[in-house]
Image 1 (cartoon, rainbow, N blue to C red):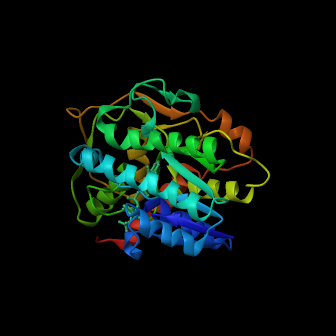
Image 2: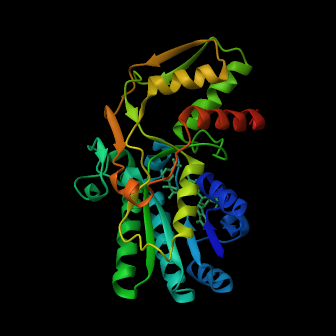
Length: 310
Ligand SMILES: NC(=O)c1ccc[n+]([C@@H]2O[C@H](COP(=O)([O-])OP(=O)(O)OC[C@H]3O[C@@H](n4cnc5c(N)ncnc54)[C@H](OP(=O)(O)O)[C@@H]3O)[C@@H](O)[C@H]2O)c1
């Protein structure tokens, strides 16, 4: 089975490629690095037409830190919307039988919710800090519904919480929060810093997903494409989170950093708790086992240790 992984050299994409290839699939990564700019419709259509994949996993996006997606808001919106409409149109025109798998970042949910249920996507405004990016993620859900409605084109939509794990960008403007913290703490240990600084008071609770678990859910979904229709979006969820304090304490402990942790309380904590409701996930994937958090952190530390200094 041929699976095309758009954005297959990025953080999620690279892990998806590894998980699928290790299970014997022909998983083909593609991005600008391989000379395909998905904002170019003709090039995208030509490429899809040559490959005619059975499934497309859409991990391509213009994304980065909160700062980045705010400072570049207009370009983030423009580039992500162009990619999305091109990807759907090109897939329909060249391989209408393909199934599109969309990881939809949970910043698409209303900013003031504490527990995200799949049906609450439209029950409020996206947080201003992710206005451009979050709204393009919402559009993945709309676009897939429109293509299903008019053409019967199939998509599987998964809402995905913050992830951590190997293969993230090492650019501070692009790296994801938890990975960036691990990288900083490793640096602190290697360079004998006497302290590391963390934003906020550490009380906020967030849900974290080991990136290979996300890829493993996609793998299970692909294996069961004929058995189950996946007609509704599904949270990849545990319905449990960790406070930033707990998180930092595990990271510091696993890395063996002996300096102080200084909490910068001038920086906002954000909402006290944000987790994903897991009822639908458990109905569809009753036996899925998530990686234990400490084990996932250890694997991530091993990865950053192996590429340090970066
Ligand atoms: N990371 C998380 O914690 C998280 C959580 C939930 C959901 N997600 C979702 O997962 C998806 C991937 O996120 P990520 O964190 O893996 O991002 P990432 O590491 O920045 O990867 C994005 C990929 O998109 C490619 N890309 C960007 N612009 C492109 C273009 N014009 N044409 C072709 N390829 C292009 C990039 O490669 P080139 O630069 O080579 O083109 C890169 O491979 C996003 O939809 C994101 O919302 C991520």
